[in-house]
Length: 451
Image 1 (cartoon, rainbow, N blue to C red):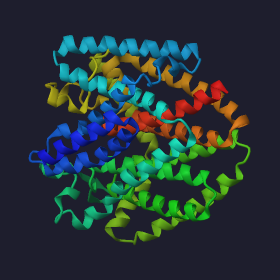
Image 2: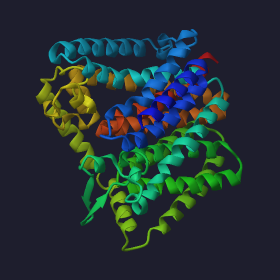
Image 3: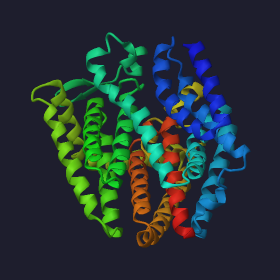
Image 4: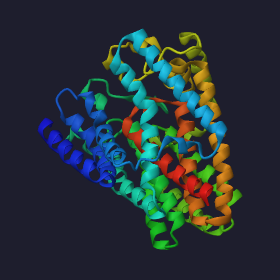
């Protein structure tokens, strides 16, 4: 697969450097190609994970070289407190990058760590520049649904065809470490489709469902709402078959935050109610596909238990934070030490153990308690500023408010997921998509501030 991947890299690189907007589409295409290419390459090399990041980096460079990248100073949205906290966190990350390099002597480790912290920021600046109008927002979501959403539904092919087509197996099967989930009194396999692991397939299926919910709420066509509801039902079904339950919780959290925010801010809420009832009915109907006493029903039984285990997950996250404090002394061990690719950079995973499996633990083990406090303060200040600007939008532009609150709810649901489980967010493609959506939110907030 080396020659095809080199050819595609050259092609997508030229596209990204010459037409950066098309480069964003190329990133989506590479994002779904990198996992099957990795599976089909001898030794399943990990460098394929960085493929989408390389193409995105070229698109960002093309934008920057033209002098059109949004300057970072605008990220404060006119809030001096937000600007101070942001600068403090950036300074702390820079200091811990030097600390990590001096302590562990591994430049690749530091690079992996900085990729985690700065890839979403660069993607945010690109997403902000990309979002010139509502049409741009809708166009991005449609591209994502068609390209990435379609591939996420290949999860349905794994149960029946993965033996005949190994590319439908999860990556562990190629390394002799297939993921088996022991729950509901049996052993379940995590189906992944063309993605390398079920967790990624679940995240992209949930994101597809969220984008369709936003688009369906904005459009008045009953036909589109019905179509969107059917696809959303299949996305939920796909999440269940991956066995990765937290994305069901993330999807639920998004809907609660979106509806709650719009209920408090929006004047014309009746369309939301109609859309919600219609999509909810179609979503509920999807569960009739699961027959009792079948493998599918076991996955469904496991899926619904996520709502029963919320307290346990939160408690575990705080336990991992305490473990991170004990391992790092509360001062931090340096950027990158908890990166999933750390073993490829010469650092043993035993260094941090499981303490970085929760987001609060990851911040503490890498940046210390101060890093966690700065992150919490930054998130709180940003949420407060966003709410103020949403209030302005509510009086001026109802449709822009819908997209702003929806993107805000999407980001909040992902932050909540990250705080209890970090593995998923070590994937550069996931970070890029989140960053682009954050940029589109900032574009909306800046419009509210400027108006």
